[in-house]
Image (cartoon, rainbow, N blue to C red):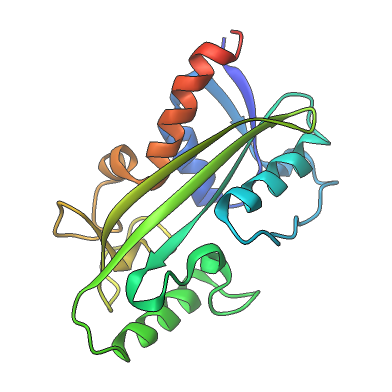
Length: 199
């Protein structure tokens, strides 16, 4: 029987990836099931702090396991930016396109021609307002100052993962979901869940 799991997000792209990566062992819902929960202020200074805020907030309304993901892009040439502000890089109401445009402008203003970067993901699992596990995933690569590919979301069209010559947005979703930062964190969670969560 599938394990019920509330994913503390309203991001349809992220939810789709999580469902695809976790597979049929989990029945994954999003925050549309608890409309009484408003936006959670992501006031943390690390991915782990923000994921914990989101997991604990949702666990007040859901009598079961809650998964919260906080993730983002770190560009070495920008001192690790956009980092925890990846979703709000160009402002609180920024779209993915706005954020990509600002990042491209920032990169083009630099003398470097190769921009080492990584995606990081931290997943926090909570239940009854208590944290039970924290899982991390990272994928190294580099950025290009142009949009390439129509898949993925966020900064995917600018990021080429290590060992590949195309962006995340150009890779088939099935392949991206085997090597992405989110995939790595979710695989760690899934291994833990197989032992820690009673079926």
